[in-house]
Figure 1 (cartoon, rainbow, N blue to C red):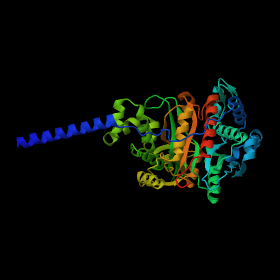
Figure 2: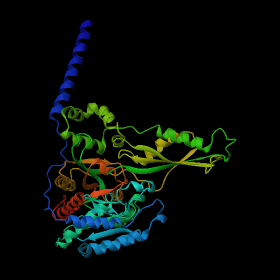
Figure 3: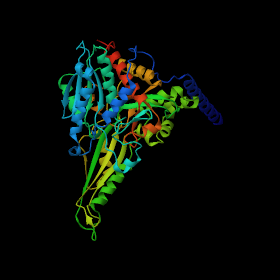
Figure 4: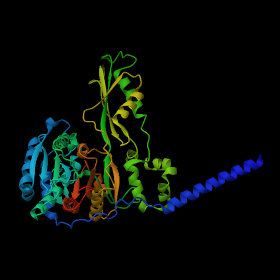
Length: 497
């Protein structure tokens, strides 16, 4: 008996030794995925007039194309004025392209290529901006719609999100067209008018292009960007989002007897609603180290210290540990699962009146491995027998497909990102929603990347106080787009072309 126990212990020790050696060997020899190798030949840089581009972005910011949740509050004449300004400001681009207006104010430009058989390129930005919160207006260093150029930046609402991208695209196109560039591949520009309020314009543009049988080589919209300090190593990185999470808002409706609050029933509509919200929020989706979010961590591990590389290289063993580490912060956790965020509650209009109807809204950002049907089923299971109705609010969208990181399109984007931002390109998952998701009906190859390099402080100004874009970043973005068009619409080939 003792001999059997001794042999058993020796066997376990040998097994443990083999496991430790396997972990060490894999950690020491493992190479992080190389997403930024120079596999694409790029067109030469295109000169952009930085000061002129900055002045034009300042002018664009002064058009108050503010999207309100209620479209009736929008000042549509601002969009009309902006459209006229674009035509006057970029004459060479407008001579080279045709322009259509879709869904009232979304713009679709077509720059026809010499070879119409080649799949076109679609580049996107949006015209609208979010409102300025009145309580914060006094905290702005410069007026939020001044478009002032000062301290090396253009200031104002929309500078980064997303008029900076739109103006950079137009500057790139103007420079190319004025220089006599003629694309071989058709280039399409889609400038949505209501991205900040649901993106109906982009969906209408996608429907129009689908009717015409457009099958693009790839689509590029805003989304990922360059960070001066990545979360793993504190070094620069260029995150190109290959997917975005789904966006869906669940409406919960509870009904009950109205009346005076002095004689309430055992369960009011508000009581049932509160219990339902709590049950749903208390049953979070499990976190898993997989998908585009995990690919970001794997890519960054190339620059990580040996202990970190050891863990990441052996995620088959340390997946649970990685999930806990990455999921410690809200931003990290969002990469690993579908998130649940109760956001709005509505009941009685008066504190001493029992509501006959109470509602709540829960916003989900759906991970690519989940689907809306499964999300709804999970919510129904959580609510159980509570007298609450569940329904999706209009505008819900599934998570996008994951774009390829081994395609000619990725190779060009990655090479340009490295050349423009001097940072390693890595794939990633976008938690926010963009107009780009509308184009997934045309192709799964939708990438989301704004080619700028920002500090954490600058990043905080998205939708916030003192939004601004450095003139260096504006010039960088315009140069990126110009080289992208010159490269992709010039010589890039896909299999079978």
